[in-house]
Amino acid sequence: MAIHEMNPTVENLEAKVALLTRQLAEERTAQITIVINNLVEARQLTPPEVPKALARALADASYLAELRMRTPLQTGACPQ
Image (cartoon, rainbow, N blue to C red; front, side, top):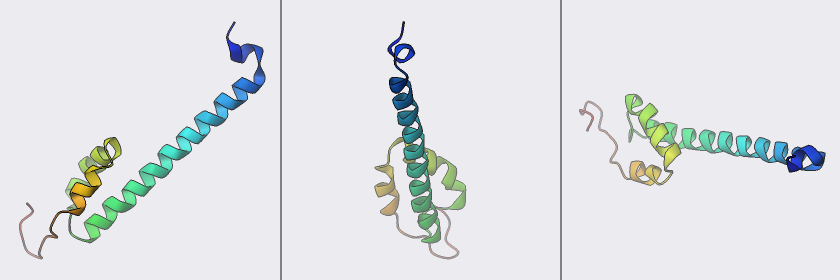
C-alpha cells in the first residue's frame, strides 16, 4: 500500500506541490515571453524567429543573454 493511500495529508501535499509546480512553470513561460516580445520590439529578434527562440529560451534561459547581445536590425536591412 502506498504512503498516500494511508495518509490523506501526504496526498494533499502532493497535490499542492503539483499545483505550485504548474504555476511556477506558467510564470516562467510568461516572463520569458515578455522578454522575447521586448526583443522583437527592440528589433533584436524578428517575428518569424519567435517560436524557436521561445522554445530554446524555455529549455535554457541563458539563451536570452545571447539574444540580448544582438545588434538591432536597421529599417530596411535584411535579417541576419
